[in-house]
Image 1 (cartoon, helix red, strand yellow):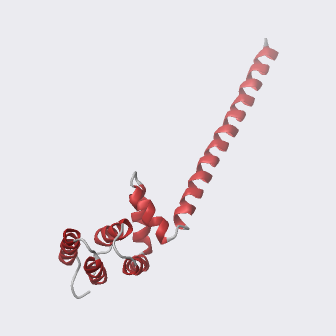
Image 2 (cartoon, rainbow, N blue to C red):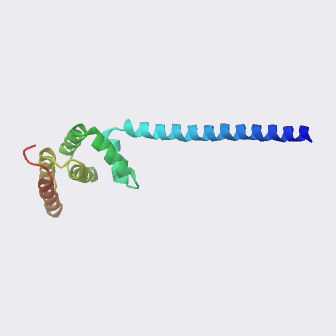
Image 3 (cartoon, helix red, strand yellow):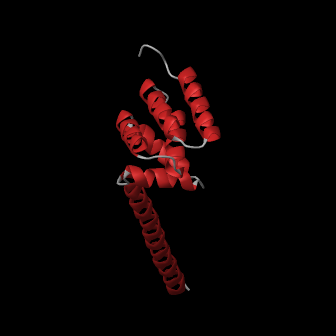
Length: 142
């Protein structure tokens, strides 16, 4: 009877070790996948972050965190892109990003320049309204 108990105990011990190895492997794979995902977001260009923001489904939150972490560098690059385009979905998205994440004098002026280039009078009026909202939300004298 004692040899049987020893064999059962050995089998249970080996099974436990195998389970721990598989759980450890699965956890490592999940962690590696998350790290790769995070690395992809960290390595994204501003254009890719704009696309991620546009697609929604949680992407805008991740892109927003990335914009904020880049700070004024992101704001300046977004303004540069906005200044180089006429009227487009990208321009509309950049205006939203500047309004939400970077309410500042620089953003305010860039949105005004963009609004002036928009051909449709109703859209132009809308972007000037956004510009005025921005003006209310950024601190003066800082």
